[in-house]
Image (cartoon, rainbow, N blue to C red; front, side):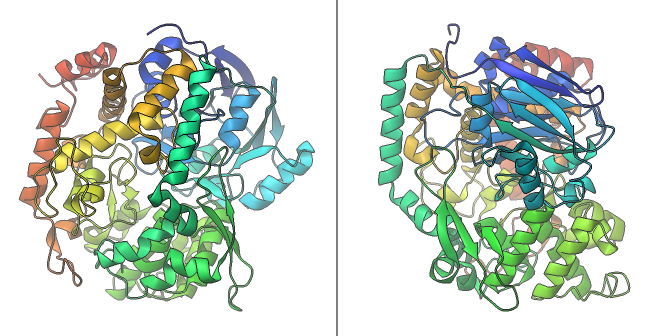
Amino acid sequence: MRKMNGGYVGKILEVDLTRESIKTTPLNMDIAQRFVGGKGYAARLLWEHTKAKVDPLSADNIIIFATGPLTATSCPSTRMCIATKSPLTGTFNDAYVGGHFSAELKFAGYDFIEIKGASKRPSYLVIENDNVELRDASGMWGKDTFATEDSIRAECGDESIRVACIGPAGEKLVRYAVVNVDRYRQAARGGVGTVMGSKQLKAVAVRGTGEVKISDPATFEGLSAEASRSIEADEGLYTMKRWGTGRSVLFSSDQDLYPTQNFQTGTFEHAENLSGEAMEKGFWVKTRACFGCPIHCGHLGVTRSSEYPQAVVEGVEYETTTLLGANCCVASLDAVAYANMLCDKYGLDTLSTGNVIAWAMECFEKGILNERMTDGLRLQFGSDKALIEMIERIAQRKGFGDLLGEGVKRAAEKIGKNSQAFAMHVKGLELPGWGIRASPGMGLAYATADRGGCHQRAWPIAYEVKGAKGPDGKPVERYGPEGKALVTKADQDGNATLFSLVACDFATGATGWNRYLGLLNSATGMKMTPSDFSVLGERIWNQIRAFNAREGFSRRDDTLPPRIFDEPLASGLAKGRNLPRPEFEKMLDDYYRLRGWDLKTGYPTEQTLKRLGLEDVSRSLDGLGLLPK
């Protein structure tokens, strides 16, 4: 690969909140050539710039706002990555968000922001091209995300400035607080907003007037136009335009994949109420798009009931209908939308919030919790009032909400009484809205995901249920263990590559692997081959696995909630099915063999790390006694 002369703007903004110092450093082109940007570059920075076992809520942890070489170009559908060590899981964590913030950051002249230290008082960072300063945010501390964004725009005198901020949940260190961007978008998972709160960093605001140079403009523009046409013509993305991610609600419930009543079942009898089709008829008022995106998957909706009047929210996204809706047995779209709006304003992850409340509802149902313990609140399944009141209490860490603000893993450990058996998480990250017992491959995907229980790393449902063929050209049987390791690894590596660009996962299928490679090369001047591009994702995945090994994670943590193994589904097409432990362990063994990881520990071997050009990582793990012999 040759020296890059496009795609990047070439600068990292480094902010030390403790010293109140700001400086720019040049982009490290060696890292860029090996890890590209976004997820990959951020993973490398986190490895190099944090010490082993760093407290995620200490001043020594860092948080990184990462763009990619396709950000702020004519390439359709790109996003931003925010990476840190998670206060919820203790693992590497990367959360993604659309909107316009990432493009504005590139226009201001920065590929990345790396923030360390902790402010002595509430602060916010303002970036206007080369003018960067920390400002006092004391007057905004305590405000919700919507009010914060309005205040910053007023103070800056710029209605177009882009804002990434936290709400009260982040300030109060709820472990799954989000970073809110452009009012209705969230970098949601793993507590990235919590890390900002620990640093007393209320917001980052950015305005830029620069441009991003392209190495080979003619080729790049041609490929970008092809990608846009492919997106416009894609039938699946037509349904995304029309129904958003809510298009999946009825499919998921029909296939026993829609977690209901704290994952006790996979079919919700009121799923139709929460579907994209229902939202189209009586909720949505307009569509919204991220920077340069032809999909317009965002749908702005307004509640109309007298009980929850005039609540405005973008969505409601599939995952939110699942966790705040079906998983809590709440069937009212207006109630779920109102709960969604509260989470956005307070700065809470709707997935973790709905998951931990559903667990508490089951504890209440089983008599493990009572009204005395919940401060008089009857936490019953199906109660929209309980759902909404609990969101308020979690965001403020009030009463029982303080415990739920720790996440379901810590809450279950505190309450005990076998409640850990139905605490639905992997490595502390609350599971998202896709069931496992009707899709065993999702179990492997969750167990091995780099940030804990996550569906965005691999989605074996495409193969098990929707009929896509695996990388070997063979169909994948739905319920058996065979073939699951291959499709999980392939998805993980492929997504790691695309998240280094930073591509939106909705557009990747229509844009196509080869076209992304051409876009990368023509934007940057790289001469990356298809083989290089394929190995990129595997390199990133192993770099992160090494980080997690350094933080104390191993094979014992690549597991699933006991409910998945021990309790068959109670109803539906897959009634009576669970995931037998021997079948899960077989999938895990197969996966480790494909990865070149030690079967006993799950650590990458020296041979694997050297093959991927990670010799320094191998030496570091060896020094810690974590390199398999």
